[in-house]
Image 1 (cartoon, rainbow, N blue to C red):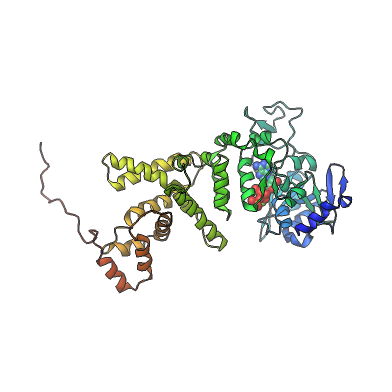
Image 2 (image 1 turned 90 degrees about the vertical axis):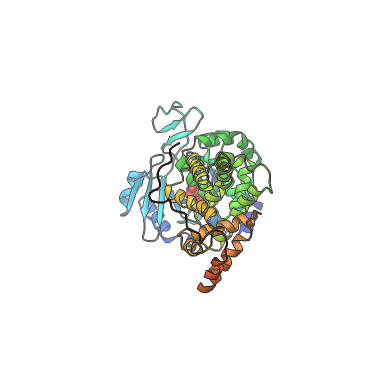
Length: 452
Ligand code: ATP
Ligand code: MG
């Protein structure tokens, strides 16, 4: 497939420069309308039948050219949201930052966006035209100026994401040498890198995400301002940064993504509490994080379930332990110290990436169980193994051991326990000498309060 593109670029006479773009006609590339989902095709057809321009655009075109399965299909058109909506029965206009139309089919949702412009001409910086607003640091806060298809291409993030495919005549429209960058496996931001990163710092993360996911190289001028602008991530809203962090961590290339984020100083702005505890590679902490991503990547590749709770539990564990040790040093019980540390570490993280409660609760349970799993004598083992978070907590023990922590064979013991018959399980628990059978001493009922 790529060879086709290479051939194409080798023979420039096949190029058709049509005004602002390069058009690659049917037969000169590896795409065909059959590769597009039936619903996306339907949306494009209806728009075109009604006299509008319409293309499949973005990640799906990129992925198809690379022989990958697209996650979803997006459509771009010159029809305005209010013109698109009446053409489709189950459609609605959504979005504050960008107004887009969602067209719902039984099997998938197609996102339809109107061509937009990145132009500030004729408007003052604060958005005198009131549709495009920018903060003093250059960040866009509202961006709903409609434009031509070439305007739309230039406001996209990467050249490889700015390819437009028309299934009607099976042509690809390339406004920024995106095909050449796909061919050379290059990540290049559209336009002036620093300006585009300032407009939307999430683009820093997108550059890294696609570089890791596709195994592409970040082109030099794109890469140059990245470290310097990393701090702009602090201006991104916590809910958006949480969503982006999941895309980074759960891409199936989490480990590669993590090291790239680290390299560009971006990780410090996503999980800052970890960065100071992760100074050198091969330390226990860095092993833990590396192993957590390795395990997550493997699970994703074998279609196993992964939860953000487990990943964040691992990312924040070094900070929780560090702080818990301090509290214990001040004379608090291990359970109290852990609980207090967990609360504080989570609160700090949530102010950066808004992790929802449905994930922070299990994170705390996984951590709590790290204290409880070693105390497995008597009836405790059975009770612990029935805890709803047992499996995750057990996986977490294995992770800590894989990272090199010495836990006196705790992981192996629980592995054997789960594989054993009920009788054997009881026997295993009975020989644990960890106070499991002891009852807490009760205060005598009529004990008088001590008077000093
Ligand atoms: P994925 O496979 O992760 O869905 P994608 O490229 O489709 O990758 P989306 O987040 O679905 O990514 O975005 C769709 C398209 O919108 C992108 O291909 C890109 O052209 C454009 N886009 C998305 N986010 C930005 C951004 N922050 N700045 C500029 N353009 C963006
Ligand atoms: Mg997409």
